[in-house]
Length: 223
Image 1 (tube, helix red, strand yellow):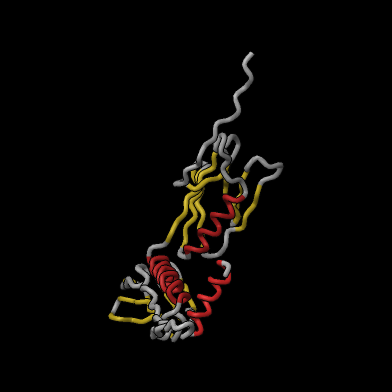
Image 2: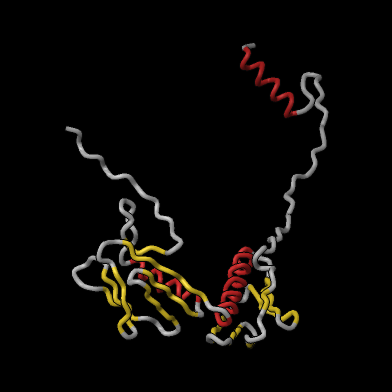
């Protein structure tokens, strides 16, 4: 027979068992299955840290709603069902996960940071500093408005939100302060957005601690 037919005959011998006086031994095969493994989310390194509450701060906790009151102001926060806020001992708050899910692990560290910002904000406060760089760039306060001259055909006038204080020094340095960290950051970012620092001469509005990466301009042609 041809090699192809011989190969086919051998295959039939293996699958059909005893044929042409050739016996095939059966090998027991274990049942194949899938193992289910319970995945436990790791506890957030930030979320598991306790929050120290100063003596001049009053905490009101009602279920998933927290209110913080201090000498600088009052803030409140509503928490999702993935996390819980508890008082462990006098002067200490702790944010804990209410379930073992991926979203709960994400919310754990986030809401612990938000809670700590509330406590620090109403007791000590936050501030953000800006600097104006450029010829003719200046800032001034007119009533409850911040007026900026940034090289446009008209000055930029921005209303200062409630709970935020703005201070201008030497017409080029702006300090934004208050007890709500998110509101301070939002207002400072809105001021910077009018004229972000450009990379060639560094002109614009930048944060005081911001490092602007500079680029080298095109060189003129040699004569």
